[in-house]
Length: 246
Image (tube, rainbow, N blue to C red; front, side, top):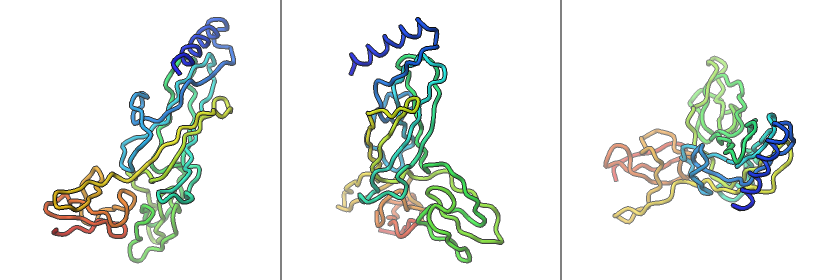
């Protein structure tokens, strides 16, 4: 891999020098996933509460207008079944001439950012609509969001903080429309279980749970975790945390 990268970098420099950026050479030496935009912290396992997930390519080109397209495909849901959105997210970069430049795409937790008009209230998929509102169904307010319809309401906007959907994914990269053979796979999982001193197993998101706060998507159904207010133990019941004394 190092030899291949070195050869590619050398060729890119030679082509750039010979034709001043007018050449049609573009290529990538590696495609991989990270948690940082610099392309340094490699991962193939992430969690639903991971702060950021990037797909990266080490890219070399002598072209000013070469394009790098990213497509995040979900190949399986959390239970191994068919995903709701096989094409989860996508984006395009035009990095310009360079050698072994890290070019990346920040995977959004809410996938394809397509906005829908929702009059009423917007909630995360799996969260029950309040009384007096009609549940339009999953993704009716955008990917990952449900529109709770109420004709007398105002236009709704969705929450900005959503968990990454648990499942199996891969990053597909195209350079100037040509798919690259390297397609790194990665997993997004719920937070790992932790054994407590009393023998109970807890699955906790980064932020400690509070009674009534949404838990669906952040932890699996039925998960338990110490609450924000000790000595509460919270259980993910339906869509929200139900907290009480142990």
